[in-house]
Amino acid sequence: MTEPSPKSKFPEPRVPRKRYFDEGDTSEDVYDVLESAALLDITEFRLFQIAYNWSFGATASEDQIEAHYIPYMFEKVVPSWVKRFTDQVLRMESDGGVDPEVFGIYPKESSDKDRSKGRVYALYLVTACLTVYLLAELAVDALRLYHCTLPPCY
Image: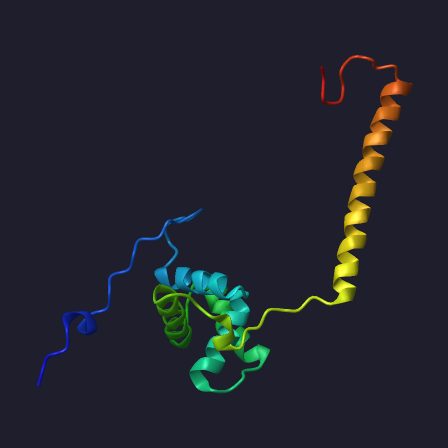
C-alpha cells in the first residue's frame, strides 16, 4: 500500500492577501467570506443562505440565518458550515474558476422595463447637467463676471 502524498496530508499554506483598510484584527475566515461573496457576486447574507443550504440540504428562514449572521457582522465569528463552503468556493477558484450556477446563482435578466428606466434616468442626468451649466452661464452674464469663472479658461 502506498502512502498518501504530503500534499494530501497537509493543507496548502495560504497565499498572503493584500489587505485594504485593515485594522489588523480581521481574521482569514472573514476575508474568505468576503472573497467568496465577491467571486459569486452576491451579498454576504446571501452567501450565508447558500452555505446553509449547501451544508444542510435545507433552506433556512431569514431569522435562522440572521442568528448566525449578526455574530459574524459584529463579532467576526464565522460558523463552521460557512467556513467549509468558502473553502469549497476558493478551492474551485484556484482550480480554474467558480461557476456561480453550480450553487444555484443565476444572473438576473434585465427586462425591457428595466432598460427603459435606465434610459429615462440617463436622460434626467443629462438634463440636470445641462440645466446647471446653463444656469451658471446665466449667472455669469447677469453678474457681469467676464473674467474666467467656468472652465475651460483660455
